Image 1 (spheres, rainbow, N blue to C red):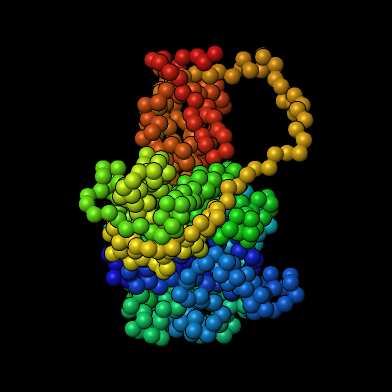
Image 2: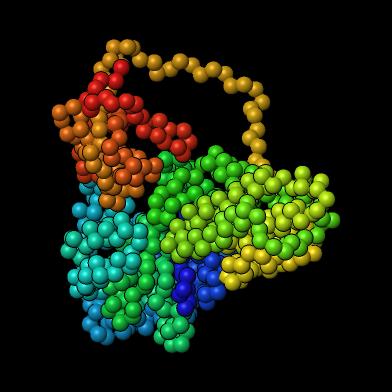
Length: 631
C-alpha cells in the first residue's frame, strides 16, 4: 500500500426497496479497504450513496401512494441507518436528487451535446422495463419471444443517443493495454466477449410522457436523463468535477469502483466511453465481486431466501457479521451464506481461537502479575518466543500485501494463523507452570510476548471488527489505533497497563437440540435394482480443465473414458481449480444423455459428495485404467 492517496466507491443503491446482504457486503468491503488504507497512513476518501431516479422508483412511489421524492426520502433512511449499524466510515454519501449532482449531470449532457456526442433519433424496438434498458431479440433468454416475457415491451419513440459505438475499438485496445482496469481477469474477458459484437449507441433519455422522474435534459425540457447515465456520474460529481478543481485533482482517478458482477457492462462499457468522450481519465480498477448464494441458489425475494443484515446483526453482532462476509468470500467468486457455515467459522475463528486467547492472557496476567502488563526481561528471546515474534510480524506484512492484492479472505486467514500460533505458544510455555519458578523472567517473557502479539493482531483485525477489537485492546490496557510503524515493531508494549478479564469476547454459539427426536423419514423414492443397473458408472482420467467463461461454478473438463475422449461441464469450480483436477481418476455416469450447458456440450456427469459448503470428488485408489466399471 504505497499509494499517495486512495479513493474507493460502492455502487449507489437504488431506493425502490430496503437494503439486503448484497448491499451490505459491497459497503462493508469498501469500508474494510478504506480502513486498511487509513491504518497504513494513506489519505483516503470513501464514497457511497443512493440512486434515486428512474422508472423503478416512480413505480414504487405510485404503489406506496406517494411522490417519487417522498419514496426516495423514506427509503434512503434504511440505507443510512444500516450503514451506521454496520460501522461504515464513508467520507461522503451522495444522493442523485441533490443539486450538487444534478448540476454536474446537466453540465456533462450539455458538453456532450454541444460537441455532437449526443444526437436525436427515433427508436423502434424492444424495451426491458425491469432493467430500464433497450434490448434486441438476441438479448432475450434462449427460446423466448418478446410476447413470452411480461417485462419486455415494444416501443417506438424519439430519444437522444450517446455515440458510444464510436469508442468500441478504443475501449477494446484500452482494456487489452491495461490488464488491471477490469478485475478479476475473468470479468475482463467477459467484457471483451461482450465487445466482440457491434456496440450500439446508448439511449440517454426518456420522454417525460413516459417517465417524468429524472434529471431534465438541459437542451430539451421534454426529456429526462436515462437513470444509468445519471447514476454513473456520481463518482465524479461527488468529488468536485466541474465545481472544485482542486478536490477533483486530489482524488481522481478512482482506485477502485467496487461493483457486483450484475452491473459489469454499465461500469466497463458505458462508463469508460462516457469518460473518454468527456475527456476525463479512466478509473484505475473496476472490481466486480460475486454474488452471495443461499446454499447453492441465488438469493431472491421471490424464493424467500434473502438474508436480512439487520437480523444477523441483532442475533450475532456487527463484528461477527462483518468478519464472516470478509473471511468467507474469495473476491471475484460467488460464496454461500448459510447459518451452519456462519456458526462454524464464528466458533472456530472467533470464539475458540481469538476470544480464547484473550481470555487466557488476561487470566494469567491477573493471576500472576497483579493485573499489570509485565516488562520484557533483558536479553535475547528464547527460540519459541522468537518464533512467535516472527509469525506475528510476518502476519503484518502478508496482511497488508494481500489486502492490496484484493485477497482479504487470505489476509484474515494469515492473521488467524498467527493467533493460533500464539495459542500454541501458551500451550508449550504453560505460564501456570512457569509461575511456580522462583525467577519470574520466563513467565514475564511469555505473558509479554502474548500481550504484544495481541496488540499487533488486534490492530490488523480492527478494520474488519472495529468494535470488538477496540474492546479487546481496552481489556489489555490500550487505547486508540496503532500506526503502521508501531505494527512493524515487536517489543513496544507499555509496562504496567491494567489488564482486565472482559468476559467472553465472542460467546460460543450453541446449537439447540430439538425438543423431541425427529420421527424417522418414510422410505420414499426407493428404486428397483433394475433401475439402478441402467446407470453405467465408469472411471475416467481428467486430461484438461479450464473455467467456463462467465460462469463462476463451472469447469470444462476433457476426460479419457477407455478409448474415448469426452467433454464434461462440471459445477465444481468453487471447490477445485483446473490444476487440482487434471490427472485425477474420477467416477462418471457414462450413459447420461448429452446436454448443453452455457453453450457447451456436456457428455456425462462427475460423481461428488457434498456436506454443507464442502464438496469432494469421488475418486478411486490404485492404478485402475480409465473406463473401468464401478460396481
